[in-house]
Length: 140
Image (tube, rainbow, N blue to C red):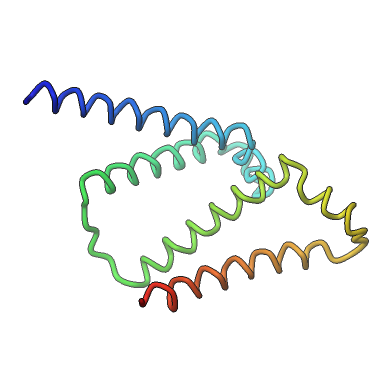
């Protein structure tokens, strides 16, 4: 019985390491951190940003595995949601930029002006859809 638990733990740990390595490799390939550092004028603190993302991943894994409850209020949850949304948005835009989605879209629809409005519309559409799902679809 103990060997079965040890084997399952080792398999779970190996799977977690593989997934985490894939996620961090994906973030590295997209060069998201250097882009953020150049936009925020913090190029000398890239190492600090990398450590923050690493520690955030480890903290999230520990909180998920051990079901630790953090007794913070709604304001903290809102701030966490805001920063999570910013991170996911940056990741999505870095992926779109890497895959050259936006230049192809601009060329196909012959968009001469208003690209920032298109990006804003995409972001607002995503946010409205998330709020719709959160407040209306999950009540059933």
